[in-house]
Length: 232
Image (cartoon, rainbow, N blue to C red; front, side, top):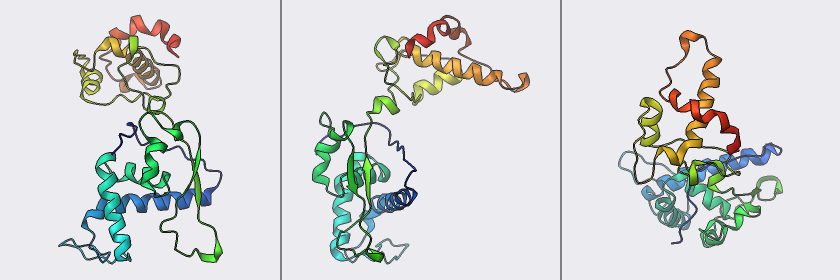
């Protein structure tokens, strides 16, 4: 199994063609649910849960296919939503994933590609319409969900969103305690800390004085906010 690109499952959707958007969202939700619970399907395409009996309208072959997709993708992508997006991007051809979003060979990171989002191509579409195709383009995780520990603590110029996640950041933002660990220390995150303080101060100044929060990182801000804009 190849190693795929890590990072948040963030989708930016072009709303120009609302009909295609609605079909994609509907298909995405369906595929995610099916991948999440495929392990409880019976061969006949019904739920085999002790507490539920549900006719899913699947043939034995289709049910087996969902089992295969679940086994191949769910643990790798750690969830139904991520696995569903990968499966749809590949037009349900998992053999294409290595070249599309493989680590070190992510063709989708360099150019967009059309994907057929319809399941089981033998289905006849009402009114003779063609199967829906959606154009996908991947963006590197550092752009939409940049890791906080950075060289010299400074953002690269292509960073767009900084996600302050994990126990280190919960402690730093709530109590001001910034403990050095193998993967986190204040000096590796100085631009992130300065950006947080700047955003917090701007937000608080828009609030009535009685509603403002105590800032545990206020002392850090004094020496950093002067040149914060040089990081971007």
